[in-house]
Amino acid sequence: MRDNYRVRTDLALETTERFAQGHVEIRGVEIQEDYNEEKDIRTTVVWIRTENGAKAMGKPQGHYITIEAPNLSIPDEDYHREVSEEVAKHLRHLIDLETEKSILVVGLGNQAITADSLGPHVVENLHITRHVIREYGLKGMGEEKMHQTSGIVPGVMAQTGMETSEIVEGVVSETKPDVVIAIDALAARSVKRLNRTIQITDTGIHPGSGVGNHRIGLTEENLRVKVIGIGVPTVVDAATIVHDSMAHLLDALDEAEQKEFLEEMISPHLHSMFVTPKDVDETVKYLSFTISEGLNLAFLQR
Image (cartoon, rainbow, N blue to C red; front, side):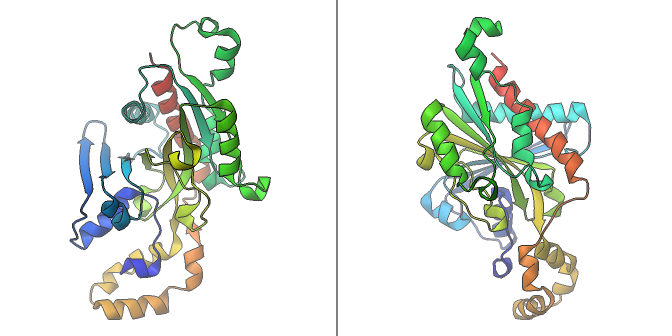
């Protein structure tokens, strides 16, 4: 039913929930959930194992780790630190950090648009080490072992006239990192997940896909290097909000009546509108610090 209304989401977890609501089993997809009651952090790992599972989910094969933290939009340093540690833990599972690595962090998005500025802000807060290590060696950092981290904010096509993938491919070709980590703002299906959820995946990232603005993806296939995608949903489809607001009315109708009712009530123009919380500017700053701290913990910890 919802497919007819182009409900958009970048979160693999929300796609599995749609199947669960319809009591449909997704073959080739494994789901593991863990809830830390003390920290109030829920982590769900969706593993798309087969091509059939990928086709059903509409997402590439791989791991999708969703960290749900209800208080993530609140300025609680201790809580954010716990979320950062959770991010670092999963990055260590996805990336072999036993040996020294060169890591390129790409901050996707438009810094002039608050809801799309997460990636650039994360790069701003990173502890960048590549240039120091290359210039002075590890002794210059006072360490015996350390990963080289570098960062880039490629902007968006309207600013540069180039595909983000073209810029990143050029940088990867020149600097030859072992891993690329792409940070981007996402779109969610559920309002309750806005600015409260972090998704980490080893399948890369497709900028703008959640809002229907499809660009060439940053993936291992395109860049020929391992790509980790990290994102936070900062917007939700306006049509989804209208749909959810009328959900109690729809329960009394059969599927055909629901379809007719929604076609009359939901303007097609709503599908090109996306909504973000009024405090998104402040929240994005908290989130960017939390994610950058998670990256710093993962790559600076010996």
